[in-house]
Image (cartoon, rainbow, N blue to C red):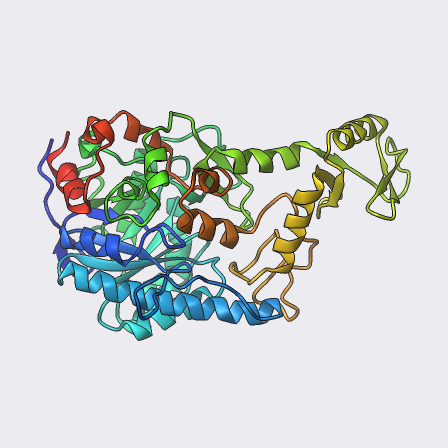
Length: 469
């Protein structure tokens, strides 16, 4: 394997190894601090980060306010306090080595307020901010306000060009790097555009080469590009390393740091990673953000698929083929289905899926009574964790805090499920919650590094990446 040399990133020389940020308590100050201590850039998630009580125990993020708007304020407060606590921990562990970054989603509820609150409360402890899941035009403004470097996450050169022309050219000196996240291989939310086929992955090399060409046009030939998604062994990327056409390249590891001793995920989750098979990670579009995302295909994902499969279109009046009357709800209010769809609906009801829930697209989905109550309760208990949520119809920036559409029962409360999977150590919790993962996670079970269930420390993982197989 080619030697891995330091590159200039964020104003200092660091190893071209970046820890990927994983939201809701999965990338925390402990993992980030140890990664930075190894000489790279550690990343803690600023998405609902954990905070601690006087005894060092995690403070559960419970919401007591009566309205969604008030609960949103509670969420922002939790986010700021948790982010500061994790930054302090990361700084202490890193010992001043490497870089400490915070990661947040632009479409996160209160994103700007949380990011600025953390940067204000943890001055001098954070070196960079990374942001994706949307078009974060104001990322450069936030970085300039606190004099830290910024790292936008994009999935195409076109997206970066739009960000640069609109905003980033005003703070070019603080652009620490550009994260290219492969939309077909990365875990969590993916940046697939409407013009890209989720079933036809594209080779990242020409896409990153096109990004570099655009960056050179803007005078950014020496600004690092950070390759994220699908990175496992660096020898598999040797044609990228020291490639003059690509310029400075760093590599981001999001999935591999999950399986380390310092990783805060449960022991059950760590063991599950060692059993995954190729194809077990599922690219889907159930997220309340509206983005594609990649997660382990478990009972949680299967139940969501079932909701959409048990779905029929309806009309309020007899129209065209929609002539078959069908009663919906406790009062059996009549809507009209096609005769074929009415037969399907009656079959689902006889199988126990007796609750018909309306969607914003004039369709009905059929679920069990228990699931119907859970969906309703989760929608009512919304705390505004996204800037816009199709599941609850929350919208952060409208006068009435709704997106103007009917809440969509085909999605789910992402805050609830990510809190549960991060903090409950049981096989049941793993199977019945959203477990984000990159598509290469099956390689844990094939890689001899993890033989006999070996779980490395972060430092051992970094050393292994540097020395190769």
